[in-house]
Amino acid sequence: MFDLPTLHALYKETAPHTEALAPPPWALAGEGLWGSVFDLGDGTMLKVVRRHGGLGSGEALHHREASALAFLGGLATDYVRVPRLIASGAFTNSYIGSAPPLAGWLRIERIAGKRLTTDGVLTMNARERDLLGERIGAAVADFGVEASARATAAESKLADTVTRSLMLSRAQLSTAELHRAADAISLGWENLRASGPLVFVHGDLNPGNLIDAGPREPLGFVDFAEAGWSLAEAEFRHFEPLGALRDSTFRGVTARRGRGPDMRAYYLAAAADALMTIAIQGNAGHPRDAMRRMGLLRHCLAEAGLD
Image 1: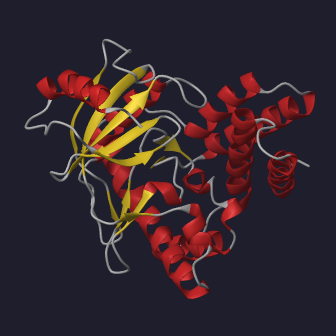
Image 2: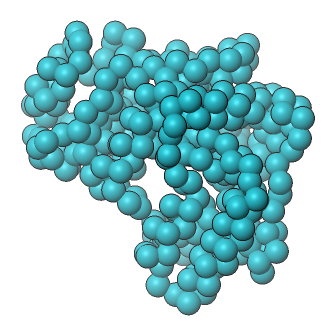
């Protein structure tokens, strides 16, 4: 969390580039691997992106999100909503106050509702979880149609997040087994991508990037730093550890879109995500955590026919 002098320094950097920015203090709304999000109290949020976090660079992720929101902002259907981008910019001075090196900032419309959490959805009762999963599936189906049309009109060239993740992950991995896994996933994924069809995906859907205002309201999609053209199954790459929520999400997307996910493509995307988690976290945590990460990777490889 940033101290007050650092918030004032951030205000001095950003205020000239966006209208009517309220001065600090700002309420911290969220903290992630790549940055912090502040509720400005005026119906907008300020997202500050760090230069360093997980795999890749904060500059690239900031550029990707700002580029995607430029044409996706304001997208709305009965099932999904995307916040408007109000302003964005890169920091010319990466060292501001006591903050870690910073890449850029985005001022975004605040979507009403509660940000979901993985623990929260896993501990829901079965009916609530099923209804939520079906809403997520319908939102994914709508987003794929509307976002693809907007990305096409904008002539967006934002590239596939799964391919990017595999490339960045492989460079961090140190064992022959994991290198072989990365190469096998890459080959299988690229073969499927060549056949298409490609759609424009959010790329990082997980409970933490969903805003829920209630069962009769559209779900808000936030955090577009991994958005780009990919196979539709890339949208579910984080869902394998979510148990029954994954299954109800598949039901929702099938009902709304008229067809379900291709399971080989899904498991390749999930395997790529498991590999990325290993590249970022390695042997961190309890030894059982590392075993679970490897177990998930081997499970997804086997389901994709790469065991």
